[in-house]
Length: 402
Image 1 (cartoon, rainbow, N blue to C red):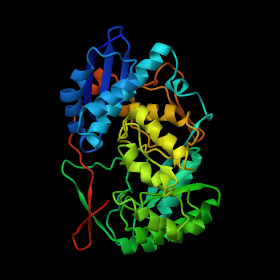
Image 2: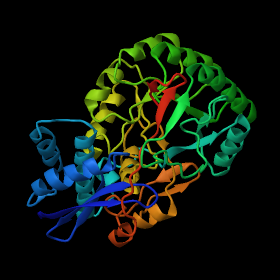
Image 3: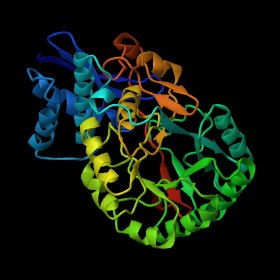
Image 4: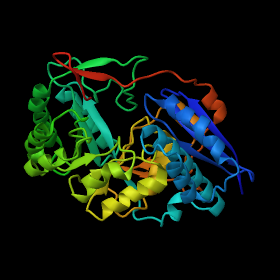
């Protein structure tokens, strides 16, 4: 069997997605997600102009060899564009291998380690009262874990708080929109939000919170300590992970668990944090961390150091990526949680898939391969539309992390 075609498909059924479809001479196809939110066309070009020509004539069964060929052979390694492109190839090859074997991909990864994949949803609102309503709604939908985000009094807009509660998409404009941020207001308000949520819903509901990289290490330590009475499952992205030594300072001052890694591209981004046990959950994804092959390496290293998975699963990851994530989630021994933001009906039309949600769990498809595809005719009805993530500024106008 040989690869005879590698098509790059860009579509926007409500938001932009980049998909690679690999075709073999025996008619078996595989799909991989290559979406990089706000920089989609950079990955599309990398695939179309630099990677796809290298795939023609290769044996699709040689997944590891192809991964090393694309990673080592580029010379300019890593980075979000390169690793998203490699991820698309890798994921598509796993899809093909599953179809050839007649097995769902998770069976090729060692089989099930659990019956279902526990997911969490996003309960958010401008006020605490709105947040309580949204938490209740997710519980009614069967969720066993909920991320809580709330507007900050005195700030006109807060990243992570949306008008559309089920289909949130933060990339909202053809040029980046701007919002105002105040760390002092935020640090004062967040503990009061979780106090209300715990009072309303009791001590056992798994609660999470995303800081969106907006604090310094000592500010994050203060927040973590103030949230300890409310027993969060994790505090996500408390600081930018560029300076990983900062996580040592957080660890010295709080026992609130830490999750980080949705912007990680390789095992080298996570290695120090994992080996020093400075985090509790690693949130790297199939699409941004080099595919199933490389993300499994990250999770294997994490398993040796008491760190669990908590993969990113926002709407900028297509159903192709979600399907791949579920096959990995259900097979690894150190699974923690899977983020699950629902896609729109238009997205589901473009990406028909067999995974399904039931009673707080996602379940991968039982069909051979990943159990997901792209309807190219439907995709063609939704052309690319430029969209950027917002930019935060402090009250004095300084550009600040989200």
